View 1 (spheres, rainbow, N blue to C red):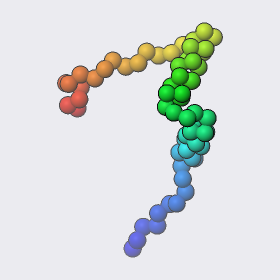
View 2: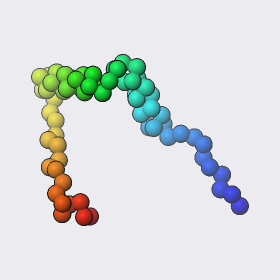
View 3: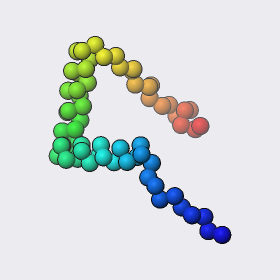
View 4: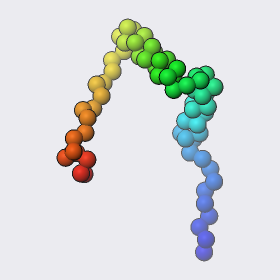
Length: 65
């Protein structure tokens, strides 16, 4: 018996796709998007938002897991 595939899309993925389309319509290049995100981060930090530091880079021993 063949399994019937669920054709519904995950609502979270649908929202991600909508966001991707909105960013693509607003910015002409990845550099423009990057510059926008850097400016937004600086603005939010000035407003007192806290950001977690990025994780440390992986080492060769970490990559073997």
